[in-house]
Length: 174
Image 1: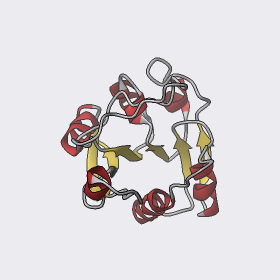
Image 2: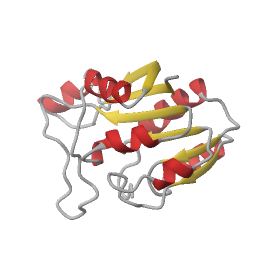
Image 3: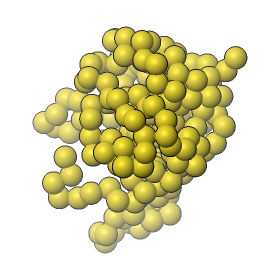
Image 4: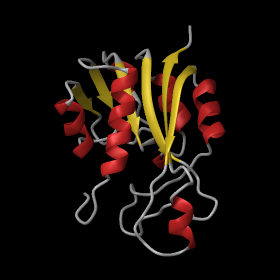
């Protein structure tokens, strides 16, 4: 993972958002397998447990049985066909999640070699908000940021001012 590039800006924006809405120390269930950002969270004082790589579209046991205070999901929901299921089944009262936003000038991401590295959804902010609300979450804070690339062209120019990532902090309703 990240052999040629490292998402420095995305990690900084995500860390700043996480620490602002859910300061450490805290017990986190992070959706997705252990990854480089797991280590970043641990370095900031969080105790992190990751899911096992199960298909969260059909197997939500890890979120139903977790005792973590907070669930995090950074760039996970776009890979699921039915993110509503896992969002509905989360037992933690707090959720910090981010998704890539749909870019009108670029198609959805799809790896041709890794079936798990594909985006079924690239959300508009209102779509992600609606999904969370339908699954029983109330959004308390939002944050968007761009992801410029150092290439020449119309798309790289658009990436300089078009938000690419959207993060939310939500709490379980009721």
